[in-house]
Image (cartoon, rainbow, N blue to C red; front, side):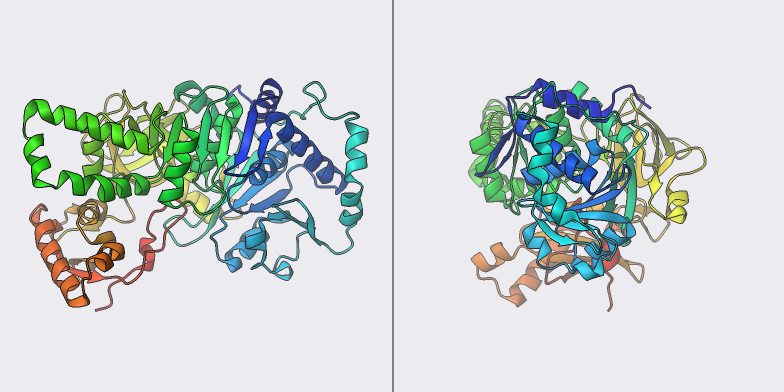
Length: 553
């Protein structure tokens, strides 16, 4: 266990940054650190009066917001266990998670609450509205409504004249305690509750504080889902521990809204997923780079540098123009996009993590990272590649250390499969390392296909090429009768804009298949492209759920 205590990080930040702005709903209400402290204190009193015990599970579901963040902090600093649930989950899945986690209280956003059924969650003692903390449902034989109505008086008695930094006292909670149960469907199709200790949260916060460039008062835009460890750790917990001002995009963030927010808020660090970067590259940069005049200019040695600088400036402006670094994680970045960003000297870096590590596994600053890598193993972890030559032969990535999960909640079989007897977490990812512990990810072991002569085929490599082609939004490459078939979801915005009919679209896909195959080894070539009529279903990390898709004919 590390020395730095997670709950102390939160308490110290509240006291040290009392008057600074802390949380804002984009184009909405702003809360200073002292306001957050007041809200946490009130929620703690509510828990105490309702006899919520340390270690009790409390579910939390809703879009990113200041109230979501304050509720999460109140749960953990009370000594209870937060169970964050993605608002996009089907109501039946929400009911299942609330019940499976043994949650006793639920905080729900209004939009989500409309589709939930309290009778399907019989163990809950209370349900509160996340939007304004009103009591929605009181459990049988409970007196929570009465307590709720006297909350102001109890608060005034405990903090006469209001709370101050001197009066703020949060009970010490060991890092050994469980902080979060994080449910994610992952890529296996089964939702498992990842048990994340406070020590894991502390490791992620400590590493970010020591290695990423933020200072008190800096701005952060939060648009990744807070119910997922990546967005929660690096758009919320780490900047909050420093004294930053976090701006939550409270609705589903379209690229247009995200870019608008970046321009207005001008964040000092941008946390992103590959999908956003790849869309900007494909929609804004590729058409420009594909022009004949541009190609001719870029072939001239001195002029090409000036053009690259101009493109860099344009791309930097998209993200507000004030950032020290764009950190990309959650999935693999398209190789072509990565090489181009490197060529124009864009300030970006790629990290690697998974929910089971809360999430960070590897990272390096933008000016120290290596092309094609996902950063360097963090200081709290050991790494091992399960192959005879970890520097050259691809094998499963195994990690062990301070921020690895404690297991899957009430699921010893899955825990035993993921964590071996020596404490190594089997990530399910394939890769190699170099002599400086930089990690190079080659794919998912579960998605790897075997070629006709036993070759290892990583469908992600083929999909990356397909996804860069015109008229293709996304793709999944599957094995069908020992042949590779690509399911393709077209870019219907482009198709509709150019008035392309179905027959012409099929012709384009055939031409695309031939063009992509020219750049692939024979054993990796696609036999057929099939149109998929709708966007592929994805995990919280925006990875396609491959297991849902098969070729039937």
